[in-house]
Length: 187
Ligand SMILES: [Zn+2]
Ligand SMILES: [Zn+2]
Image (cartoon, rainbow, N blue to C red):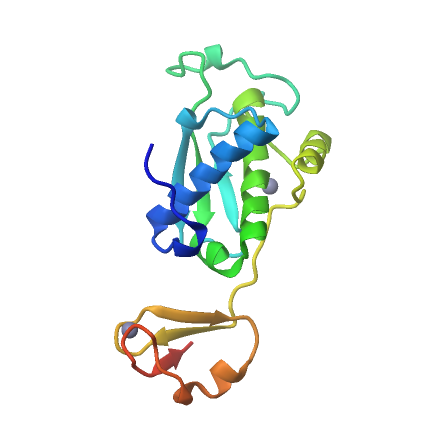
């Protein structure tokens, strides 16, 4: 197993996946979530609007939450659940604190657990019971889109996201980017 990335030093998309995957394995051990991680793929999206994360999965005919799905019926599945993808939103990771991100991952793990067992997933009564047991929200976690994104005028990196008007936005000519010591652009 690779070295664990410390939460504070997560920066690249690969770090977000590595940290989140490790956290999810810990949830499986400590909270008893029934998920096969060998059938889960991971991606980081920077395009998703407002959804912090999502499980992308094939739509299967006749699948119902609460009724174990007969994976033997699916061509090429060899009796195993078809892979699904846990898609993590970059901007949500950046704007959430650690506890919010962990709760987001526990929410998505319930979707994966339901999907791998029943072939589909929703936010119904079974989900609500699991969400209570796993101390997470029933609604898919959403995040506010930043009102202002401040970037470095020299290299274009994102320096900060702000959700309301604030001193950094109003008086940005007084600030310099850490990366290049350049002025800040806002959009
Ligand atoms: Zn959800
Ligand atoms: Zn820069």
